[in-house]
Length: 382
Ligand SMILES: Cc1cc2nc3c(=O)[nH]c(=O)nc-3n(C[C@H](O)[C@H](O)[C@H](O)COP(=O)(O)OP(=O)(O)OC[C@H]3O[C@@H](n4cnc5c(N)ncnc54)[C@H](O)[C@@H]3O)c2cc1C
Image 1 (cartoon, protein in one colour):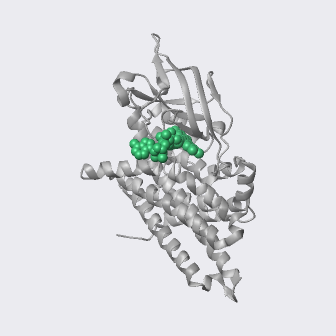
Image 2 (cartoon, rainbow, N blue to C red):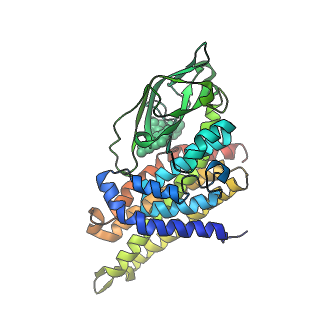
Image 3 (cartoon, rainbow, N blue to C red):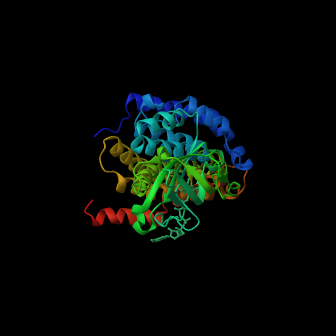
C-alpha cells in the first residue's frame, strides 16, 4: 500500500492548487455574492484539461486517473465550491457515462468536445416527483413509426442547466417495465422544444447555475440513445456511483477551506491576552477538524483508487460522500464558532463555506440514500 501520489498525480495537484489559489479564490466571494456563473474560470479549466480529466486523450480528455480527478476537485472546491461542482458534473455525470456507454460515433461527436471543454454538459435525472426515488420518472419518450423519439416532461434542479450545451437525459419509455423502462439520451440543448427555466435561487453554491428543464415534443433520432433502450437506470446509477466520488472531493475541499480559514484566524485573534489558538477549547476543535478532513480525504481517495483499479467501488463511494459531506458541514459550523461574530457576517468566508457545505448532503443522493446504498451492499455481503 502506497500513500504517495505518483508524479503525474502530484503534478495535477500542484497545477490545480496554483490555479485555485491565484485565479479561483480571489473571485470566490464575488461569484457567490453576484450569483455569477464563472465562465472565465470554466474556460481556464478547459485549457488546464480539468473538464475531462479521466477521459482518454483520443477523446479530448487528459488521459489521467480518478485519483488525479479527486486531487484537482479538492483544490478547486477548497477555493470555490461552485466552480468545483461545475467541473464535477462535466467530468463525472456527463463525460463518464458517454465514455462508458456511448457508441464510437457518439464519443467522437459529443465526448471529444465535452472532455476538452469546447462544450459544457449537464445531467438530467431529477424531476419534481422523482428525486431520491429516481425510478419514478414521468418524462416520457415515445418511439414513432419512423424511428424518431418524441420526449415530453420536466426536469428539476439541473446543475449547469442554464449554461450547458449538451444534456445526458433520462426518460421513461415503458412505464410497465418500471426501472427497466428507463432510457438515457444525449440531448443537444438547442434542440427545438427544450426550454430552460430561470436559475434556482439557492442557499449556497450560488455560482453554480441550476434550473428546471422543460421538454415539449422534443424530437431525437435513435442515434441519440445512450446505452440500450431500457438500460437508462443502469446508466444513471453507475454514473452516480462515480459522481459521488467527485462530490465527496468537493466536500473535502469545503471542509479544508473551513479548517484553514479557522486556523489562520485563531492564530491572529487574541482574547484574554493570547491568540485564541492557544485556548485548549479552540485547539480541540481544530484538532478534530484536521483529523476528520484527513479521514474524509482517505475515504475519497480509496473510492477513486478502486475505480481506477476497475474494482467494485459503489459502497466505498457512498461511504466517502456520506462521511465527507458530514465532515464539511461540521467543519464549517465549527469554523463559524471559531470566528465568533466575524463568522456570522459576509465579510469573512466561513459563512459561505457553511452555506456551500449543505448541498453535499443533498445532491447525487441524500445522506439517507447513501446509508440505504451502503446497507444494501452490506446485506449482499459486499
Ligand atoms: C442545488 C442542486 C443541484 C442539483 N443538481 C442536480 C443535477 O444536476 N441533476 C439531477 O438530476 N438532479 C440534481 N439535483 C437533485 C438532487 O439530486 C435531489 O434534490 C436529491 O436527490 C433529493 O431528491 P428530492 O429533492 O426530490 O428529495 P426527496 O426525494 O423528496 O427527499 C426528501 C427527504 O426524504 C428523504 N428520503 C427520501 N426517500 C427516503 C427513503 N427511502 N428513506 C429515508 N429517507 C428518504 C431524503 O433523504 C430527504 O431527506 C440537484 C439538487 C439541488 C438542490
